[in-house]
Length: 230
Image (cartoon, one colour):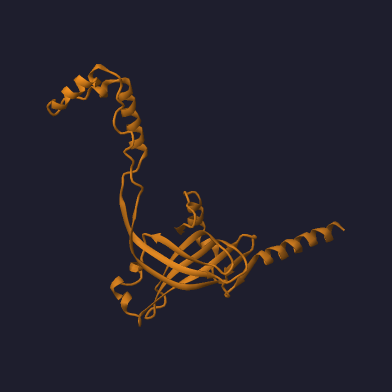
């Protein structure tokens, strides 16, 4: 009896797994359009709020003395810097500056995709990739993979965009991209995870191939509808 019960549990778990993970080429998401372009990604602007020292109630801040200091020659030290509030503000600014990254702009590539949810389920997670294939040498295929956290209801469409530092340069000269007879590009959906826990996945794609990148991006901050490069 115990052996029969264990066998039933195994068969049940296998059946549930098969129901949740649907491996096929019939993708439930339709790719309406796709394109890529050169792009720049700017970091958040550093805030200068509270950068000036606080003005304590000291004699030099009274109207007469303050107006007189307007005509002080260049290089004269602001007396507010030597107050307790002034020193505290300067120390706080130093800590904030040390924690803040300098403003910079990163050069890269933007990959855009418009999709239509053809299923009757709500989509929450999408794994997709942008492919570049040189028809003169099929072995030279470039794949830029992305993971998106989305909310797409049944029969709804959605625009997706991912930023990557990698472009098609490692496959073919970027100037050759205009030659449609030698280069093919397309967007491919690799995996779809629904709000009910079921999953669709392309037959010849394995999530293990992006396991390290997947674990990395999960530890990064996310915003609604954002796509992360894998």
